[in-house]
Figure 1 (spheres, rainbow, N blue to C red):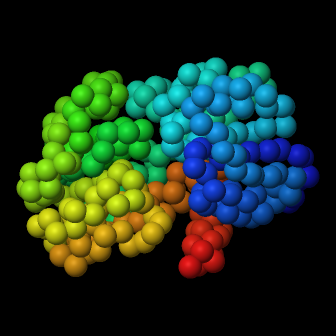
Figure 2 (cartoon, rainbow, N blue to C red; figure 1 turned 180 degrees about the vertical axis):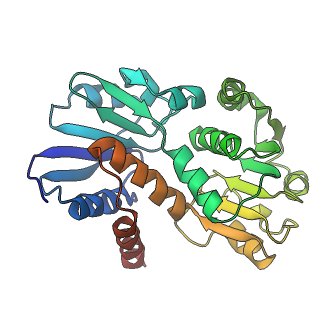
Length: 280
């Protein structure tokens, strides 16, 4: 059954031209018969987010937010979901009749992707300390991994991640080793799960680490693919999970939050595959 009620949603970030979220959400609307719904993308930075949100009308159902907006989102929302508050970052803003609520579906995206890849509950390593790393820490906590090592460039810039860990009741070890490739590679040895939240190219030098066969590596980067580090880990027998899987599953959760209906995963996956193929 279709509906022609006009509702709007969009993805915000900077840069944003590369985002595949429109393909995912538009496919979901088609599959759900939401013919009056639209989904766009807007270039918005941290300074511009409050004004953008304040200018939205009642036709808006929700927003998806990517870097660098995941932390500042919590400041513009009227309410913050408990999970997003614990993480200290969000990626979804849903508008109700008179209030907006911030959520973090990145946790769902990461946890679902890792479970599907058969990730174990042993030692995990997270590369990076930004908003996605905070979500990764929450996902690994949900998966009940035994220990988490977080690899960063500068421990002084990991305060937000450390605060997330404290709110979750987790106790990761933070190592400022990303500028010391041999030290970082040593910490990767024997890991059961690795989640890289680093930007494209930033983890390339770790491709030659002694990856353990069976390690599950989720690389949040999905373009270009495969990344250098994913290729190196795959050659050593690791199980590789593309950031596309995380993108898909977090979007499925976003669709449900914004529309009130379960996200149609099959239709969204098909649209994502087509969008990636079209980009070559």
